[in-house]
Length: 158
Length: 231
Image (cartoon, rainbow over all chains, first blue to last red; front, side, top):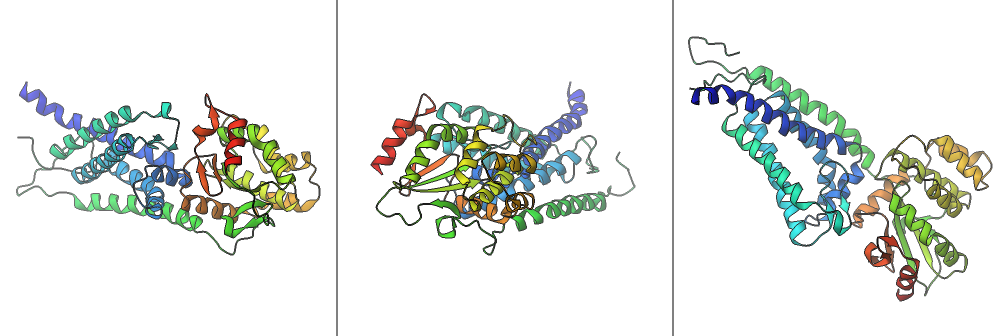
């Protein structure tokens, strides 16, 4: 049992890397060609001063693509996973505060964003999805040794 | 994969650092043109009826005093904006014609390329004193999919012809995206004003919640009229 878990661990790590990295990459890619919309999505959270929100709206898609690529390739897996997980925690906090304050916005996670009708908010499913991704990040931080990665980790499982 | 040497196995830092440098480099190369294109250009060409002090909007009845000021932030590709235009378009044209309100249109372009083209063409139409007809015509022929390729320059020129704009100025204005930098300025000003959805309508500087001028999710002209009357 324990033996097979040890064998499965780098494969689970590979799946975690591809899912977390893939989601980040796609999320960034879908936003990168519409910077106005991305800025609008960040402003709609009504947390940051407008000029800062606009700057983050502009940069965030590139950051997501970058971390996503590093995770997919498996470069500095532990650091990349920590960054990816941290960004997800920020998203969860932002979505939760919007929900708690009664804002009616789309998270803008995969493009879109901005204010929507109250019936169109999906805060709970957004938070659950991001929480699942944080768990993948935590797994990778604990077990950064994964299959098919550029990191040639010499650490043996035993 | 692990090469087991006699001593402590070495990590291949060279490869990973190279990959990090390539990834970061490619991203920076992509980011820089975006940053540059987002820089507003204060010297950009602006259509005749545009006022930089009104957030680069296209202004009707600029000198009217003592009447409500209605500001509309919209995107030609946004379905709710088409719905708003269908509801309020004629009423607004009427207010403009009778000099009962100052009306400012801000064509945003967050949906993408065809919104930029449409906003540019609308500004070209404004130069021909035909903004309102062009505006209405575009909305009533809004494609069902965003950036589908339908709103090409040829299509926009034909729309101009359809509302009676003749002459080469309009055509070259559309083809050359003459007001492209102005479109960026409009978008930047909308961002600074915290416009986070379209349509966003301000009456005398106050944002009117879309929900308050709708009935069952559909824009309601009577509610809009009373919002304008209240000021």
